[in-house]
Amino acid sequence: MNATNSRPEVLQAARVLLQQMGVSLVDLITAPAELGSGVPSFRDYVPVVMAAVSPASQRMYGTYWNKAIDLWGDRGIDQILPSRSKQPCATSRSTR
Image (cartoon, rainbow, N blue to C red; front, side, top):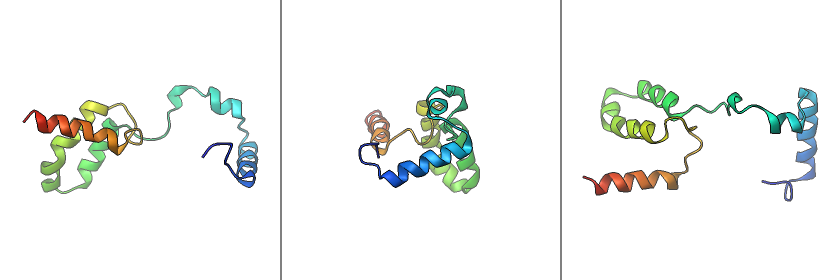
């Protein structure tokens, strides 16, 4: 959603919230990149997933998860669209 189609009441609520938090739009725009998005990277999150599944699932999917770490390790897990994940799968199939 962008400013041209946002509802005025939603924009006003955002302004009020930012004001109550003591945050300006300039603060948001100029915040250092090292603050991050709060979304874990593939490198950080895949081990969490692997620890949460059964050993059988680890054996079944571990290779794919490790490929995801190799390809996108430092990227946030919210940065890869499903359409982007199809290319490595196609490449993997063609090199068998």
